[in-house]
Length: 443
Image 1 (spheres, one colour):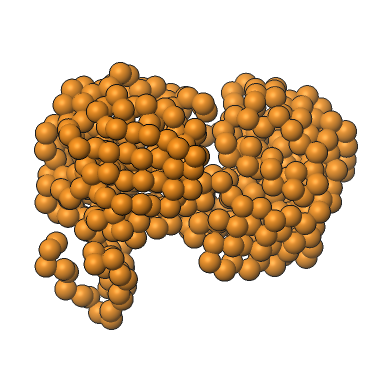
Image 2: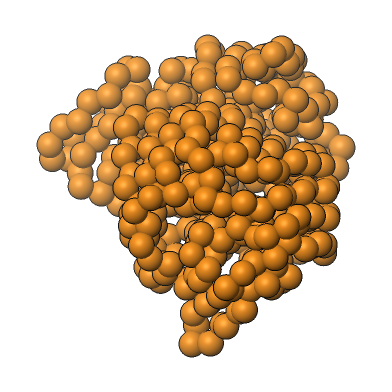
């Protein structure tokens, strides 16, 4: 079993470069289907979700080359319109291929997607949007089939600003005749990034970042080269880690305006925070204190994905903070693990009340999902003694260099995989040895 050992209580110091955004690269990889030519995607983080997307592209017949943080996709060879259940179950974002395949081939056959179990996340809005564009939808036998000889532009009004439904509507609309206008669209930066890729391919898309997006359909599109924006949730996680462990860090390659709410929260908690261009500086030299209630909401509100690591950081300090989770009903599953460390958290429904403690103690824990796993790492960095975290497959879905980055900031981390091989980053180098190695003395 993959295991992460963390010896906490050491302040973090230094500079870290934030990876490319997971929630941008996944829909962009799906969008490469639309061009029928070659697309080059830079700043693509080496994540298991990215590997799952590439596996889907290859199954569809695309030629894909992944070197470092650059992915090249030649979709001219696409010759299928189906995705098997095994690949769909790898991640929640697999559903984003639906609109792109439909626009390119006129037919798409998929299964319900997988991903973290955060509560019901129906794809009704996705299907409603595709239906408005003219798709015929059949959901019998546990498989989803969409067909349309000719998609037509229309007006789509989403009942909630769903990120996935907005993306699927944008991709399908690229293959529709005429103009499509999406109202109450999601406003996340990742939507804007998808728009920029599509425009680089020659698509006529505008309005991303606002609640109204317009698409003038026309495919096949041209080839494109695109650099993915930075991952704001990864940036928020590193800020939370420093706030919990103490110290002073500088994030580079991040759009600080996208993290204004996170920065303001940590200022309120007693940290010194400053944004400048593509950098954020955070200094946590004293104990944290409770902040005003935190309520998650669609962008530009407080991001639900940042809630778990921020909650974990505020477990250590003084005062009380109330969290209200409006997006996912099972977003607090990590709190039971934090309680094992001595955290004082009371959860009732969608509300969590966190009473800060001066000290947390290391404990064995299991990551319940992607962001919950990141929360356990944050708390472990600020705890006394050793923590042992399993369930790293969840964390690997969204964090490409978590152990390396934290080690570069001075954290003591030792990772052991299920083959008995070790990746020891405590001395700022990586070493692999055969067999089950002895753990470092300082852990």
